[in-house]
Image (cartoon, rainbow, N blue to C red; front, side, top):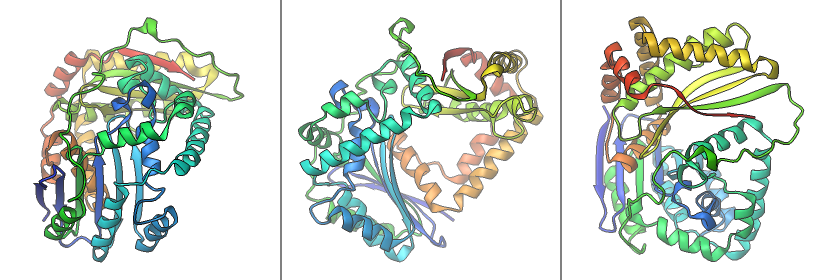
Length: 408
């Protein structure tokens, strides 16, 4: 059985672990409340830029030594940046716990050298250019800008070519000192973890970290952007047989318990198999992709819809999608559909729970966002508590009318 343990160090660093002694692996990660929505205009792209720089060397390791040790420890290691957080994580055999934690902790204090900054700037500019050549990615970015404006949740995670070219090492170091405070971070763990040793080691390794109170105030609270402020950039001619459409619908935020029911509703409408959109558009061959999913932020939530189909099929497919949503709004869902969605969702949760690397993200995200632990049994109970009446109340509350639509 898994046991949840947590503590807060004197410097403010929170440690949260789901300990499963009979697991074959152990996963560890630093979850930092630092994302695109925390950036000012001159800082656009800095959270993601910092993620890259963490692997360019520390006071104790060169970039080559970091990569060599990651390979030597085996398992899986990576990092990502989103609108609200940056995460550095890895899964290893339990015998490597101390080495993995020491390495991850060292990465949280990169040297941020000017020369590395200039080199990595070119890497990120190439990354931006690469994604600009991918129409689906551009559609997602523009949909967020259209919904929230170019700041806050609408700010591009990678930044823009202009913001990255204008970035300075001094701005990065100042941003790092502000966001990478221990009180603004969670060290999470899952699997075959020695919690007592984890706390002891983290206490020693972070004792010299500078500390300051963590601000929970949102720099740009989520609010719908006036559509008049959104200027659709003229699309460059691209030779493609597919069109890509992204839509937004209102949904619960990360602090709203309605998020559980909305995830199930999204599964019913547009999961990748046996959903209403699947039978209407994918099984019939009308579209290459047609799916819905939810995304929950601290103060806002969305249901996304993604459609990829032949350019000539866009009008008819959008009409079919509108009909699917209209039937859901007017008639709700059947108990059979709901039970199937619950079975599918809980089965996926059970299978994911067998991998500490998967459980790590649940532990870390929940503790960073809500200081809440949701074990597997509790998660399953929450899904099974949803009935059709609750879905009806959800539909009445959120309506599911299209908020934003972007074509690419």
